[in-house]
Length: 79
Length: 389
Image (tube, rainbow over all chains, first blue to last red):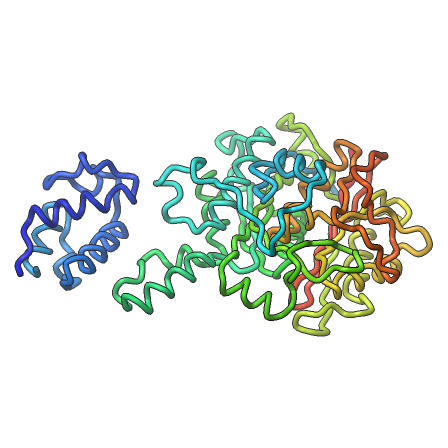
């Protein structure tokens, strides 16, 4: 079953408090810098998403991420 | 050679948050609640999510104790030559929580779900990494691992760092949070932890330790450096002595050869005679082996009139790699206040352990020179001598 962008964005919002980030600050156009997050955070978010949606996002799809929207797109593409 | 002085102290222990929490618990003379694992202090409100989320519990403990010691010493690293500031932060195991949780994830969810930050969180040097990054300490730094002697070794090696000319000020101590079933089950199987739920060092009924988690931290400086920045000096770290038993993986040498060697070296370096020592903070784990061999070793070093001793471990638990540095904080307090805390639960004297173990309650007397012992699994011994200024 396909995963929708809203489902992925909501999942990310659910995870970010663990990183000390306010979920209300998470928007598709938010960059990692905006949210004071780094590439290790992205790895953790992707692990949680892969676990939750039972999908696998290849590493090459995660190389060019700069915004939350890019992450959502990468997940939806593989969903 | 310049004296090495202590200008700040910090601690996290089952006695509470802070050096004062530790000292209050020790001087209150209350035994730990019954059980073989002491309850750890709750530090969850003391670090933000961002500060704590890439730190294992032992690193969080170490960081908090270091912040307390730095504040206590009135150190502002921005005002110092940070290349001349160092850190030595030891541990017995390292990020045990991260290892334990990571193995669970690996087994239940598979390789792909293992947190990417596992290694930098579980490594034994994770606490010193946190401390140096927090303060911007640019000089030398490393992690000393020698089981239950890690704390004393860390403080001793930090002393060497200053004496050798590599640093003027060093944050020195250790941290340990290993209250996880892998450790407790193993200690129980070994018979090292008490089966009766009571730590009673040097008592005839002693049958093992109560395990605790904690961190202790000191600020060490050359006397000149402390004077230059107008720091208040708490006491001197006068001597450090280290040795190995090379006898058995976990049992101390029954004749105490290694312990005698480490104590003697520490006294010699401090330039004091055995008769100058006013008080000994014993390793005193409450295991049958340690307390007997430590008693024998003390008799060998001190002859006819050994000074009074007490063990901190029945009051706040055995904090493994953190024990030496937490007890160093106790030694500093003992010198400052001329008071020694009791060895609580020592009620039934052991005919073979016949020293003056301060069991009656807090003893007030002039305390100028203190010896602190730490002996670790693996046969590693490290002793420190503190002197009033």
